[in-house]
Length: 302
Image (cartoon, rainbow, N blue to C red):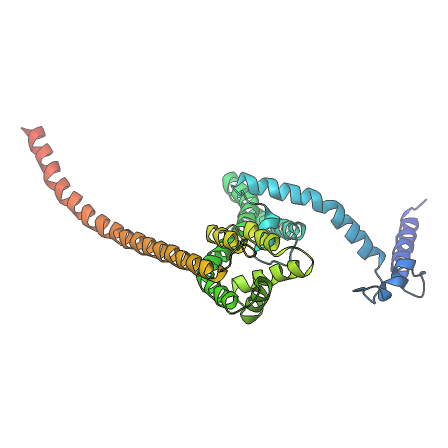
């Protein structure tokens, strides 16, 4: 008995059933899909079984991928949590979404490295480097990019803090309350601190105390100068001349930034002498090596 026609009929039947179940006139719309358009932020298009299956598969796979990504990142020296860095730079991605994207790019790198290894057929060592090195490099590049963004964000807070502190001191001295001053500073510019202050203002509007919201920002930013400023702002209800205290703290912040700039200039000035020293020593060593070699030849022949 020829089983090929039976197999073809079963294959066509399964394929037709999978296609027909996607048609709205063929399948019954579920209760969740019928209520989705009436929910806040709900989509008008019903979710298909494939979408629900992919969402379930992704939600089941995400914790394992996130744990593996965190483990690999810690092996390469990452000490700060991923969620903290993403929240600091106002990234729209969650830690799970970032790890999924990272692992996805690693899979693409692995596929490309394997394709090149199969096509070129290099030695075993180079094959291992292509297959293993490509996804590792992609993983590290994405991790270093996020770390660089986090470092730059902290650097921008340090640079903007003296000016913002002076502006806040002027507002408080002119009669603004602390909450009103923070709200005004958050809406007047689009800088790094202004974006962080918008989050602080939102936390205050949600019912959190001003000092607690500012301390949340300070813990997230991890900037020493900001910690000192928040300590001064915490005396809002106790100090009578808070504007003068904030002005003094802004002066200290500006002095710290100026000192750091001078150190960087001096460090770069010292780095300039490295190639000059190498360029001077190499010819000198060559000029000394020639008579030394000649003297050795004379003693050996004598």
